[in-house]
Image (cartoon, rainbow, N blue to C red; front, side, top):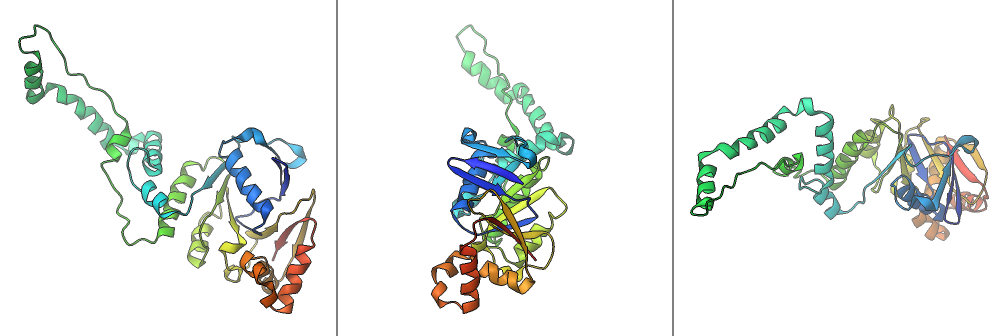
Length: 285
C-alpha cells in the first residue's frame, strides 16, 4: 500500500496487481500527476510517498513509465536520430552489453586509421603550403549514437499501438531492475491483454483508466483489480462475480456516467451506490 500526499491531495493506493483499472476521477488524475512528478523525478518536493507502516518510499526505489499516445511522438522516438528515445536507449543497452556489439567498437577503432590515409595526408599538405607550420589530423571520439543514427527500423504496416508497445517493451527492459509502474495511454483489447500477460512474472504493474478497457474481455484471474480512489484514509475490498464486475466497470466509464439516464435500472443503481462511497474501494472477482 502507498500513502501519497501530493499538493493538497491525500491518496491511498492499495497493493498493486499486474493490471490495475481505475475509475477515471479527479483522484486518479492526481495519482497520474504524482507518479510523473515523483518517480519521473520532476518537482518531487511537492510529493510525499510512504509504504506500509509509514515507511518512506524514495523516488529512486521505483520507476515509472508513460508514453503519450501521439503519432508524432511515436514516429520521432522510433527513429534512431541522436536525441530520440530509441537511440538513447539503444546506446545505453550497447554500453551495458559491449561484448555483444563488437562490430560497433570495431567501426570506432577503424575510423582512427583515417589519419594515415594518403588522401588526408594530401589535404594536410595543402593546408600547410607556404606557411612553415605543421597541422596534424587528430581523431575526436564520437558516441555510439552517431553510428546508430545511420540505421533505421522498418515498421511500415505495423499499427501505431504496436509501435507504442515496442517503446514500452524497450523501456521496461532497461528499467527492469526496480519495481515498475507502467501507465498505458491507449485502448486495451484482447491483443493488448495478451501482451500485458507476458509480464505476469515480472515486477511490473500496469495502470489504466476504466475508459480505456471493455471489462467484459477480462479473464477471471487474481492478477487484476478495479480501484476507485476517494478522499479517504481507509480502503474497502469487495468481491464480485464476473458478470457483476463487468457491470461495475461499465457503470464507472465516464461516457456512461454522462448518459446515465439512458442506462438500465440495474446499472443506474450500481453507479448510484458507488457515487455514495466515502472509502477507497478495491473491487476483485
